[in-house]
Length: 358
Image (cartoon, rainbow, N blue to C red):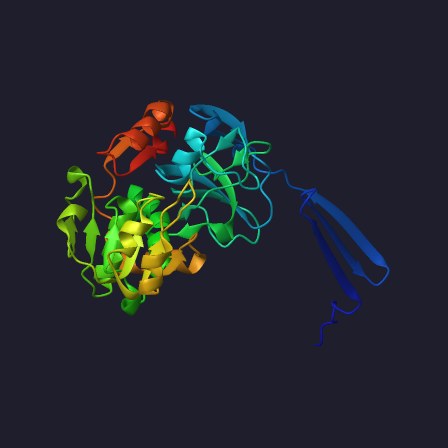
């Protein structure tokens, strides 16, 4: 017995309208046709967040904010921990950030956050439950996200979130600085610095990456309390260092007046990499730089390949993120936490624990 082929003359059509969140379905067999429209509402839980809002320089508070609607490919992330940057965030907080397009108040700071995906939109590359690093967000309507990571909930394109090992916990916020450190030299053993200026978190990560690449750099630190914590490299007071043949020098001090002192310590044909952030103009005396054929290079913001590289180094055990978080606080105490992060020399890295709000 041969059954008839009922697929003959069958046509189907499915249209998805992402803006209206509707699906139009039509099925037609010869002249017989049926249509159906389905409507899906956006997830209501994703529409509000609590965030650190910097209303103007020196004035911030934890505030309720509305979130922009999630779009195709987005993920909704509940933030568990966020770090406070003592570079760019300090300049935004103090009002000393040099003008750039998009700068203005009010704003939500933060680009060092980790959390859990609680909702994934269609075509997102992450799934609910994934533990991810988030380098900021722009999902707060008229409130600027500069860089938007200091919030209890964010909505970001899934490509912006990086899946990481949940065992990292709060240490995951350090991946941004680790990627910044990696970007300065791209992990190339032959180009690692001989001298690093500054033993804050960024300086320590640059030194740890150099050690992982087989080098043993010297680190200058003028604050005696910050000279501890070296593993595989040496930290000294620059006044006690007489060496004048450093081939590669990396400055993370942010001191705009330091170039002449560094040029005086470099070998002929040497290089200075400026990996800090400088709010004032830099200058140097030309003759000493001319005599040494000095090269000066600027290391800018990390790229996605840097973030992937340091994730691999951390997962393999080649790069440790231990011992860098020294202070912790909660979002309701953010004002005091930011002041401590920026003014207490004993504070290497301050982390806000957003899980207290869940």
